[in-house]
Length: 378
Image (cartoon, rainbow, N blue to C red; front, side, top):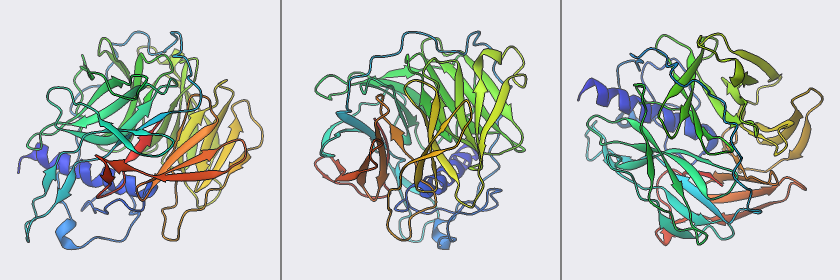
């Protein structure tokens, strides 16, 4: 097996492990020698994957002169009618083989009211399968999706897709990067309100993590790194496109001022909004439509905190079954009124006005889903 394939398998192992934090139905895979603390009991030996350390051989990018996304925001269309699901390729180990065999899976569009399958999302040339990352713009029609290239030398690629009024996906638009990047592990993905910028987070060799802002039209990129934590997740664009909120290692919520990235990737202004005070980790983030507050989860509790300071307000306490993970990964729609999370192939929808929760089964190709649950966005 090539070193690049090994790194990709390490990435698959780690993201499935991380996804398991948000989805207890996801397959548990242990990465031998990983520096991250385990979040699930070790799997049987047949599921263990040995791999070289993940490497980032390329220098940080500074070619994107304006990382802010200050164009006209895409118009909100009211209550979401659709959501997109994405997951990693299905992996199985035939017989006693220690080499995984992957079955590609496409992203899919679902009816938000019923969870019913509407259509598979076509993949751009060179992308063989979906990955487990999907982000939505506020219009409930424009989505950014991560894809996986062929298994022998796999990389993660990004593309955009727009839905018609009937939910049918159009032709995907691949995002081709101008600056080289080694994308075998990506923690999170977020699409700006105007649809012109993608933000994603990755680990760095030797420790630390990187946030990248990518212009979807030109492929130019601007990077920012932190050496204090090896995982950055929960990316959320401010509605005005001038800052990004994110979660540091599950223990702190921070805000990155994109207007001060400058030419020095380490010269940006980043401030802590809230530190975790208990054992429950932070997972997802979303700005309120006016940009004045953040919606986040602490464990399974959904809370809201003003960016200007002040106490947090509890919005909802969804009850998950025993054995669920400690954190909850979610997507908030463009109105800021509806929250979506996935558990055991069911889409759970939370009204942020009163905390009421409803759920619908997620079907794929007119049948129930198989394997680990997907991630979803609307």
